[in-house]
Image 1 (cartoon, helix red, strand yellow):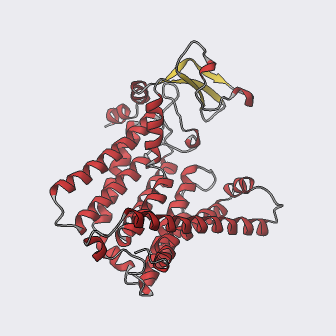
Image 2 (cartoon, one colour):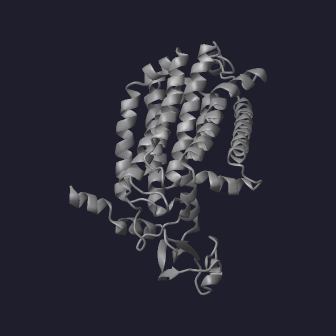
Image 3 (cartoon, helix red, strand yellow):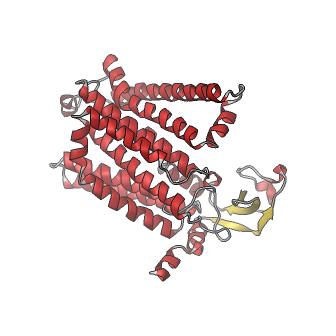
Length: 394
């Protein structure tokens, strides 16, 4: 077992994948940079080495050490930068609402809550085990924003697996008569996207094979456990307001007991954000059904069956819902900023400076992300459907 772990955690394996797709360290491997003017912006800086046709970037480690690396293929560089975004929280925060408005709010509520639970386990595991990312050299780490975050397990892999697995399960369960050809197509799409997200993490040098393997197995086990209780969870949300309140409090408590309090990391911030999403979805779904509004603003099954759903209708629904989400996000952040200045008696400053202040205080950061994104997700599942009904987009 130890030999297998060492094999999967070998940074040379990651470097080999990077080299295969055109990423490699320059000959001047490590550079100590003490002045800001020695740090190059990531851009196609062929002027650094005029006799070389390929781009040369400057990256950094957790310390002030800098290193240079070559990007041999612009196509793979941009391709994997795009693919890895499909494993980021921002993608799911956009993707899941659009699916919710245009497909099935019950199904997507279950997927979102499962995603939130799985991501909490993954992010907390990172801050408990504290296993570093692949070592540089030989690996080139391209995403500097994650350097303060540990590597094991890969939450990108967990997110991709969780969303794919639970979505396939729900679609196949709700459409038992679906043709085998369509099932295989859906499976192929989910498998391809998940595989590319995992490959992108190797290309960007942010995870080892061990990180990815653990993330996939972790999420598969947790997703399977959740799907076995899918009907009970959805039925409970759709029949009991107290259960929705309980879900909200559960996610809030999970944030309060998060294992990393003293040390800030992007993992902790993302955890508060995602738990807020799950909390808002649970409360909003329960309240909507408690008030008898479970069918408000939905595209009727008859409309789907008669093929009257047009692209313009789907785009209009997505546009109205997205505007509502942006308003909720902006207003919630402004409320937190105003309360923070008031409570801590802070002078007027930019929002960026205030956000840095918030990051230094555990409970203030918890409030910032949880309050903001529980309001955003509540808007997705409740207020947006009211708006869709008001504008008769159904």
